[in-house]
Amino acid sequence: MNYNELKTLIQDSRTTRRFKKDAIVNFEDLKEILDLARITSSAKNMQPIKYILVTNKDSVERLTQTAKWAAHLKDWEQKEDEKPSAFILMLNDQMIDGFPMFDAGASFTAISLAAKAKGLATCPMASIDKELCKELFVIPDCYDVMIGIAVGVGAENIKLVDTKKLDTNYYRLEDETHCVPKRTLEQIIVGEY
Ligand SMILES: Cc1cc2nc3c(=O)[nH]c(=O)nc-3n(C[C@H](O)[C@H](O)[C@H](O)COP(=O)(O)O)c2cc1C
Image (tube, rainbow, N blue to C red; front, side):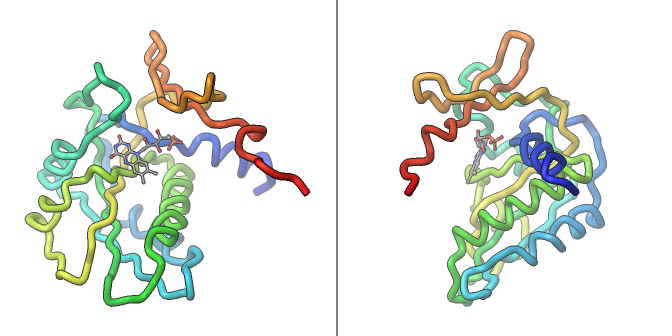
């Protein structure tokens, strides 16, 4: 892969909230993706992040219904036929003395890129209902549910734009394109020595 191909993959690997109805995402796909996530950098190489894979329709449905989608879009609700096909739950194994927040971020980046390369799309969800996760799945007390990642086949146009007046809220255009404002290089590089 050359630099431009990597650039395109990163640009195209966006949080997605509208998915193709009834697309199948199976354990094989999810395991291949996690096989890349598991080799990402980890503080002290302690690797405290563990995962639960969910493709069961009822569980996916309940996780989808109870999570909060797109807080910035006040007049949009995910429709019945826009739901994801699977979830990956990220857990912090508290028996391991690691640095889970950073490790989870590094892992998520690999997951979203690997998913994109497989023709899938993801939505990281801090709003996943953690109590529901404990109800639905066997999760020993030492595991803290950190985040859910919805996975499916994306069905929306998403465009990166530069922030205007430092406003980072995402928004939709009239044609339904989802716009994601990103701070410019000038705004984020605060020193060059
Ligand atoms: C830690 C984290 C938690 C997030 N939680 C949610 C969530 O609960 N619901 C949601 O719709 N989006 C959630 N998102 C997605 C962000 O809104 C999204 O990353 C942001 O709008 C930028 O879009 P991008 O990922 O395409 O760059 C979360 C993202 C991150 C990194």
